[in-house]
Amino acid sequence: MAATAQAARIEALIRESFLRLLKTRDVESITVSELAREAGINRSTFYRHYDSIFAVLGDCIALNAGNADKKVPDPDDPEFMEKVRLVLEDSFRDIATHPELYGMAGRYQSKVGVARHVAILQERANAFYEGLMPGLEARYPGLSAARKYIPSVLAHVGGGITDLWVMSGMKESPEEMSRMELRIFCGLLEGFAAC
Image (cartoon, rainbow, N blue to C red; front, top):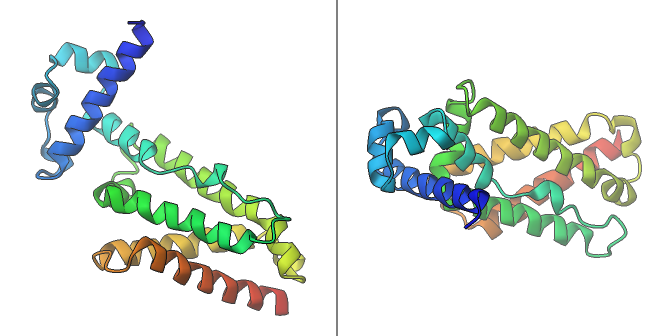
């Protein structure tokens, strides 16, 4: 087995073990010794791959966040808005898989090992909303006056909607949430276009 394949396997094992521990424990109470024991490795193996528990958390956040920025629909697609909704639905499904990671991304964003990943996630969200602009401008004439603000507004509104969903226990399905978020976005866009 190649060294990189073995390293990837060990890192995946560490992350899986971390997520198991996280279901019953707070991240701050998980020790490297405990995580290594759960993963069936020793501490020195852990430190060859990660420098802290928070570095593992950062990787888990990044790897479970999806990749909406790579799924921007073609602006000329007649099903553009439905495809946007499906990307939003995928994002809600990703969060529903590990909701504890979503909350920790904000709570521990200043910790070394997490901050870099949170910044990358914010960049990816901004890239997604920026990528939507050609398709949105084609559907909502008049957006150009507010164009520089719209991706940021949509990202913040989307983040707020997601926060409320997670804090309220995720009672609505990812499909329901994606439909609600898209309706809110459409209302905002109509308002921007009318001004």
